Image 1 (cartoon, helix red, strand yellow):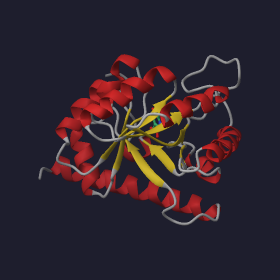
Image 2 (cartoon, protein in one colour):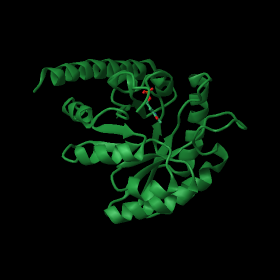
Image 3 (spheres, rainbow, N blue to C red):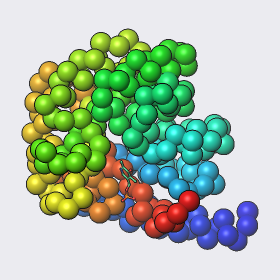
Image 4 (tube, protein in one colour):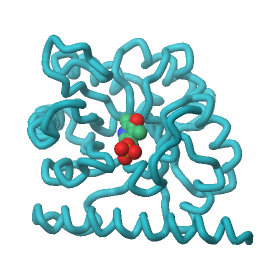
Length: 237
Ligand SMILES: *Cc1c(COP(=O)(O)O)cnc(C)c1O
């Protein structure tokens, strides 16, 4: 093992440890059990070698947001026991291909994606876990991504109606220039109503490097953490 690999492993181990302690502290602060919140490590822009080191360090869930990068990395890491979460915006003509390697698609935000995802899962021969991405942007704003909360129930019915798709819950990103606490409180209300209709869909994926504490205080079951584990992403690629 080269010195560079050892140094990178040590850096990732230290960062991961710090994030795990932040998550544990946030759980404690909300009176939630330790281990109530899972960490999805977002490896976008970073090489397959980092995924390998993370797997050695006990990471079981990794997130990617661009199809071409994700499909290549998943192939390079096919011997690892990691679960691939697709968290990026999805084009409908790529949906079936993403279902070919993703274990979870967290960014299902419109009905147009549903048939492609179901077809891809069918071709792979196993059900695909889906989260619906809901927009927390104020009404009327230029939505970054995510389903309008008013359309969530209809989208959920579409996903739940597909035999090869498993509706697991919701995902959201806090708006750029707003208080994440306020946004995640709204999300908690949406999730509560959503679970009344879909009691089995209890995943709430919210919170990133900068706002995971606020998300956990509002009931997140999964946080998606990139920079705090891997370091700053290169600006261009
Ligand atoms: C990149 C990304 C993250 C991780 O963000 P960090 O600030 O690096 O922790 C989480 N969720 C989504 C949807 C992302 O695209």
